[in-house]
Length: 134
Ligand code: HEM
Image (cartoon, rainbow, N blue to C red):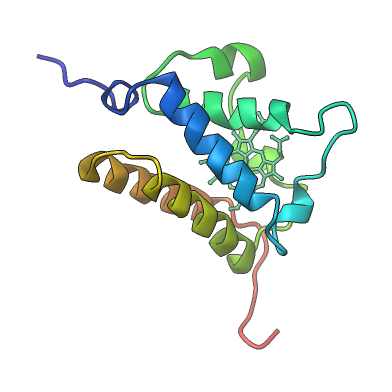
């Protein structure tokens, strides 16, 4: 028997859409990371960025591979290289993503899996060093 993917266990696409909506509402207000998410005048609600993150997470967790079809290989480090991501930015990003996961209604096992993944993924995207006291 094949175990259902996390995508299926949490209820599929609507779960990830709501997660990303919550996350985006919070991150845009963040004093450290919010300014990186500059609004395109043609897309003030950031529908494009929200769709990309949603489809990426959906694909990662075993759902449809629409992200790959639309954006190709994720290359997340490359796609984040124009943002300065140090420990502070990573922690602010994680704060909002953790809160969105906690508010998502996912059961504890899935919630823990999501937490573990985003912590590793966010740390892997750090691209500048920060030193204490600077
Ligand atoms: C560590 C702190 C992070 C910061 C400051 C950050 C910031 C950003 C910004 C400003 C964008 C541009 C919005 C857009 O055009 O889509 C973006 C895109 C994106 N981010 Fe992050 N991000 C972080 C971590 C992560 C993590 C951990 C993931 C995955 C788990 C992720 C996945 C994505 C994806 C999939 C896109 C869209 C890529 C594309 O297809 O163009 N990000 N991020």
